[in-house]
Image (tube, rainbow, N blue to C red; front, side, top):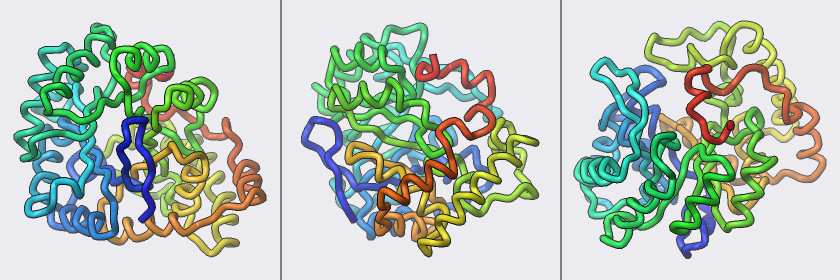
Length: 331
């Protein structure tokens, strides 16, 4: 495993992180035993960054990670937790809450579910439009001083919000979607991060499966799989996006690697300050993901990838309209 500096606070994490959301929520049925085995395998392979959220499965994901880490050394895992998204009993969504008093309440429950004394990276899942980001970061900073949090992060924040937050307390990382299908951050957000010394935690690196190389138009989704509502997976959008994947497949086959490995290797090639988190729910998927670490992309490879998938080639938004409206990063 390779390791990277994370932010400017002298911490380091594995070059690839494991995203745990799909083990509890939003991608249909999961296998608890296999999920825990995958977390254990990730640890064995040197992965240290584990990304979760208190709202993934309404607490289930944190309990799962806490169980998987029992008997392990605490410093083996750099735990990143997102908070603030509200859930309803039927599994729906109830908005966002990042008020200072709520921050501390959410943190208390996360510490208990994870069975840890501190969280390495704590970050609001979205920017709450009703609470100044200075107040949110200030509340987390109080928890840093108290020893319950080590570092502060943001998620899906725009350049102006990042600057305002960083002025209150150093921000270690911004978590945001970044892939060959989602490159909007390259204009303003990524340069801002680099100016301030903030790392980028990239999620959606495989565009929720589209860039895995295994997605097909005929794939049936369960009613609990949110991809059924995402524009990129609908009708003509899906047809166009899968045709882009086929162009990428030609490059991957020439290099004798998988499409997923090529897509991940491209992210890794974009800078040492970028750490992709991959939502591998099974050990077999994890093995494929880790193979990307051994892929070297020459300038001609990067040119071929750019030609196969130009920055604005993807069809459809990355979320449905209501969710897009919540993204500070898109404003």
